[in-house]
Length: 269
Image (cartoon, rainbow, N blue to C red; front, side, top):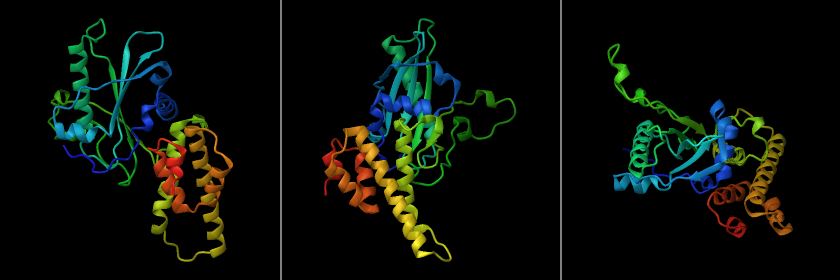
């Protein structure tokens, strides 16, 4: 199975339960989310993929969590993937991961009392590097068309797909939603990387200068909020660095923020 060659770096961010909760509350606008008990949210150690090459590649691109339904004892499992490029067979990957999850639960003796398998949801957060997502989101769409009546024997499994650079950020998510901040940061990075591709018949240099200044100030303010949320309040020196930095330096710092362990690591020269 083909895998992207580039890692988008989201997995460390989504090792935080608050990030998982904000992603679900802010962007998965489905009624079952309101029934989740987020106080029970905990990481889940998935059974390894039997293919060693795929297991090594997936280690930085996948994560799994579980939590209970509110007022109940049953678990729901969240299988996350962070593709940096369009994966044509991501639906198959989710099908295989779900099958391994069910077999692992059975072997551990952790199935519900009913003996049935629990709910499992695949969620892909795509960093948008390849443009619009074009791959199937339903396993059945990867299968050949079959004569009428035979389709009921085809495997069916659908996953959620969230595009970090293009997914609408709902106002209801609020400014404190960490997932919303991440997606807004991706918008800033996307605008910076695509700026050279924008061609217009004529540009007012003063208007362009004002727009560029506004974009830079907005990017600096957004990055300041992200740094403050992750590492604590910025001091006067840090704020001065942000205020003086150009677009390319701000973009570099925004990329470092995804994996940095300290403020100094982000703002290092």
